[in-house]
Length: 140
Image 1 (spheres, rainbow, N blue to C red):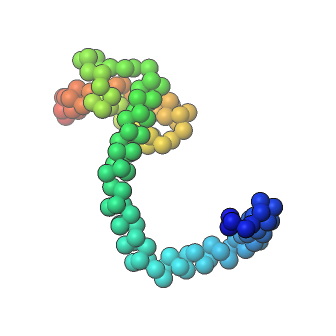
Image 2 (cartoon, rainbow, N blue to C red):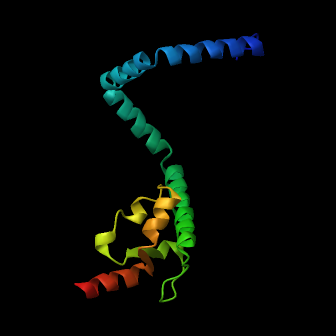
Image 3 (cartoon, helix red, strand yellow):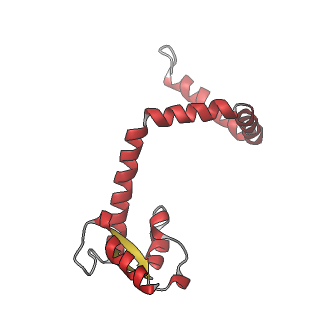
């Protein structure tokens, strides 16, 4: 909003742009797709630069999100520790009791809705990574 534009004028301008976008949705999508095709290298370079610039912050945010989501999943499962006593969330994993009943890997699908996760978590035991490795070693 420019300094001389009133709130009413701004709302009118925004309504015009929203109406235009609604009426020309396919055309705008086509233009965006063509732009992405024409400028593939430019966009990739900008994405790499943006990633490098914010690399540490992104890694930190992902680590925090993953750790908190894993704690949520442990709470949904109802188990807070491995039978050996290990209780640090980053040391725990979910082991499917029956590999044939496994629909998806929980650790790779933490973004799924809780209903899907609960259904899959009910097929699992919580183990620390060492106990999990020992279990698979003994199976083979």
